[in-house]
Length: 569
Image 1 (cartoon, rainbow, N blue to C red):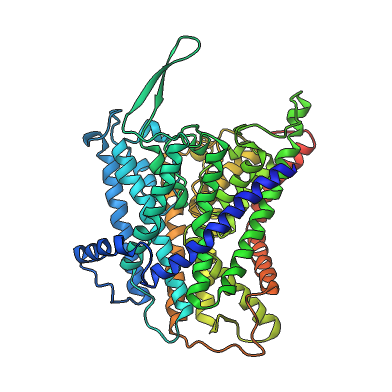
Image 2: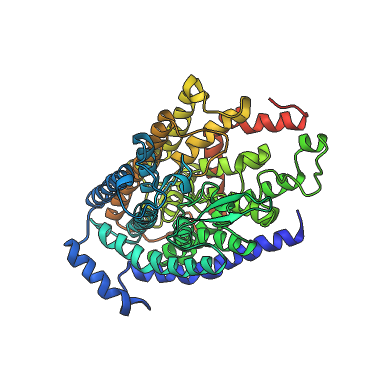
């Protein structure tokens, strides 16, 4: 680790905070229906969209109606994307002449992009036409991110209101998130990417002559526009198989810093939106502090582990002075590679600028554990905020048990119904992750997809299901996931991780909104100070440790001990 490396990390994170604060306040005005700088241009478009869809923006919905609208919209998106991939060979904008995608891969990919996971069991440049990339995948990059933002805003309204029966209108929140936030930001970032050298063209490919005189076909496409929303929407699915390690997706250290800034921007800004909408900005600061502390701690561990190097490679005669460079791009450096690894997994982004399977065992443990904690550090666009609020409810419950008082958060009493629903939501991830991992570890056809045996092979399976259920989408390279078993079970894990999680969250929102808001008293546990921040961090780490430590001990932890002893499987 170096001072310059930490300075780079600090500058990127500082740039995120500088932009997140005004964006968060802007989003609070947008979702409140207030006039903004973009209203003169976009408000007429918004009204026409509502008229075309038959939506009355003045009519709000109960949590059940809100949830049903969300589920119906995403089901329609899944069917449309599935059909687009299956019929790809008969559709235009297919200069490569790709055929239709197989049923199991189309199912997996459609679920993946609808759930904001963007897990890819295929190489984008060798499988999907330009039409599917633009009209299918990129569209879902926008609306899946907007869905997460809408859900977060609905939960925020529940805490802001008192004795209310409604939590907003899903169609209005979805439209405003897309029209006022995601689209304008994506245009600006796409132009920045194109200026940095990322291609934006409808050409299929270009031929080049190598130094040896051989012909090389280099894939092209509308990369910059997809790259922008891929990062801003914490989607993560790359145009190319190598994702953000590919020089056409991420050509330089500047584009790498832009990528990290883009994926952290909206999740960080949502905490400022939360504070503004509930009328107490300190509450948003407290949540942001928890996210930031754990994000920086994870980055420090990965940075230290990777710069320390791999003793097995050193023993084999490889110069380890620059640390472990396997699977990394030299143009990014160790510091911003470490920040990228932790940010993309603390978020639900899943884009990668290095191969996670090539990290040292402890370096690989951190992104895996960040996903397993629930994608809340700072989490996906919207999903990170409502996921952190579930942890906050659990933290005040623990605090209430310690002092013998009814748990209370933001003036709302947390009672039996809310705790049952919160635990139901929080148990979805370990059920999907550990359940599917155990099944795959016992199935010969699933084990045949592994490139490695022993602890590393187990980590490949565990990482895949953690990534799917956590709606992350990154992969531990070495697992051939394009098989009927993995395409189907990973798809199911994604569905559980997104929709089986969010339905109880919306039910909690409906229950919280209906409660009267009590004024703070001398006995109220403050949830905006350092004590609450520490308690919330402890709850997150203890809950994650209790659920996943046995599985992690059989994978990356034992692998680290073996590496230190100079042994491998």
